[in-house]
Length: 113
Image 1 (cartoon, rainbow, N blue to C red):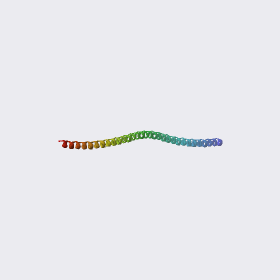
Image 2 (spheres, rainbow, N blue to C red; image 1 turned 180 degrees about the horizontal axis):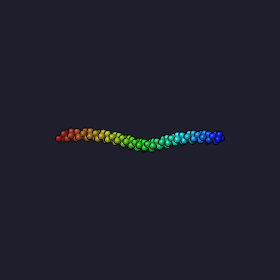
Image 3 (cartoon, rainbow, N blue to C red; image 1 turned 90 degrees about the vertical axis):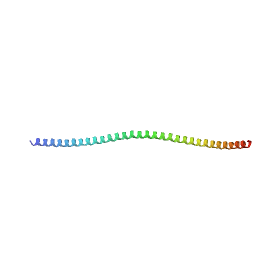
Image 4 (cartoon, rainbow, N blue to C red; image 1 turned 45 degrees about the horizontal axis):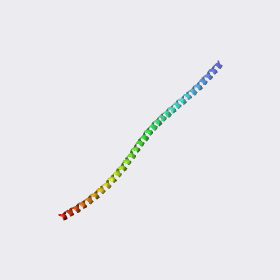
């Protein structure tokens, strides 16, 4: 009987130790699962950030292209304005010369009359 009690006691202690070990392993697995879920979430967030970065880079390229086009348009407009100013100067000189010629012709006409 005493031997039986010692065997039962030893078995119970072994079962308790085994149960404690299983419980500890379950806790470790649970923690590891939480850690992995957290890592997966971080990776998903990183993927979303990468996608957003690509969108922002595309938008940046688009805006840069539009800016370059606008700068070219401004430069062309500036050149066109300068060309118009030169043309106006030439026309003003032509008008001045024509007025002088008109006055000369009018003067000669009045002398001829």
